Structure formats: C-alpha cells, structure tokens
Length: 301
Image (tube, rainbow, N blue to C red; front, side, top):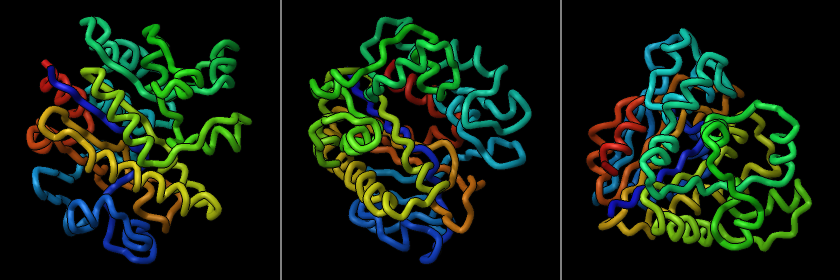
C-alpha cells in the first residue's frame, strides 16, 4: 500500500537572495542548507539532491494581484484554478461562490467517498468547537472541507493520546494562549509523531500556519522560536522519512515569509518539496497549485 504524507506550510515562497529581508538567508535554515546544500532563491528555484526535490509552484495562476489563502488553498486541496474561477485572488477564507467547490472537490472528500484510510493530523482546541456550535462559518479551506463533509476533527484528547498534533507542533502555544497543560514536545518528537500517524494511513495531511503569521506580524518574541520550530520539524520529517515506502510533499499557497520588507503576500512562486517513493513524479507533475490534488490522487490510485 502506498503511503502519502502532505505537509501544508502557509505563506512560504521562494524569494530573492537577500540577507536583510529574506529570513532563510538572514538566519539560516538547515532544512535547506543541510539537506539540499543551498537556500532556494529566485536565481536558483530548483534544488535536486539525492532523490530530494525542491522546486517552485506557480501561485499566481494567471490572475493579477497578490495571491491569497482562500483561493490558493482551494486550488491546492480542490484541484481547481480558484482565482481564475472567481476572477481574483481572495482570502483568508474561501469566497462565497467557492464554498460549493470546497465542499465537493476537496481531497478529503475524495478519499472518504472511496472508503480510503486518511487522516488530517491537526487537532482543534475546545474553543474552536464552541465557535462551530455557535453557527459561525468563517473557516479555513481545510477545516471547511472536513466540516462540510462530516469528517471528524481531532480534539485535545487525540493530542494527549499521541494521535494528533497541535497547530504549533510543540503544544506551547496551546498552553500559553489557551490555558492547556499539555506536555511540551520537541519539533523532532512532533515529526516522529506525524510520521507514525502517516504509517497508519494511505493519506495524511498536516497544516502549519504560523509561517504566514510570522510574515505578517513579525512578533520578535515569537519569531526566532517559531522559525526554529518549523525548521527542526521539517528537517526531521525529511531525514526520518521512509523514502522507500512513503511519499512526502511539502507545499505552500503563496509567498510571504521569504520577504520581510513588506507585511503582505508576494507574487513569488510557492515553495514545494517532494521526497520519497514518488518524489520525482511530483517534481515533474506539479507546475502550479491546482496540480497538487490530482498528483496526489494519481499516486494513490
């Protein structure tokens, strides 16, 4: 059985080789340096080494303006050119006319309808379920995809049981901001947990959105820590991956974090990394965000 792990990292593009405003050059990023031997930039958009592939995905999709999360994520998880569909980029939530597309075309529904074994590995805090119960519907593409298709969302109990991850990976943000008292785990332990979950499913997805927050808000107290967390997490996922039996795809919806000279999104290509059994296939098949869903489905059959 093929195993596929998809990690969606919000708001990371391939930017300029800039030691002042590109944090990957300014602070270093061992996921790039130690694994690929270089840091991607607009002058070197593709890095290929030892069966690992780092490459750009077009996030503009032929539409003017700055790419946004609502349309970008709909394109990724729905396999459609969402900004072209509505005539503009839109976010952070799905545009009203895209909601039926999110409901019927999302990748999780595809696997549910075929009774395939899949998992969205993120957990949600109690306050989120209270929000849903209140009737409010401002949801991200992934959460809306699951909610509209009656797919169970992980809870804090799943985190405690080791069957899910909090959105911040280490649990620290849930403890500090939401009042939980969860055991703090390291990014490596988070990577090991996610890989274990992926071993138990045909398709596993994890979403990390703090990168987009860093690009927008630049909170110095959180920047260094969060930047290191995602670096350690991705580094360990890639290095610990069973490359003979599992395929890994790391993707993003638009640029942002790679250019700290502005507090908005960019038109830079979105970062994409493929590794494992069908990594090379993904490298050749994905050209823009709308290619991602169908490429995953092609691999899993």
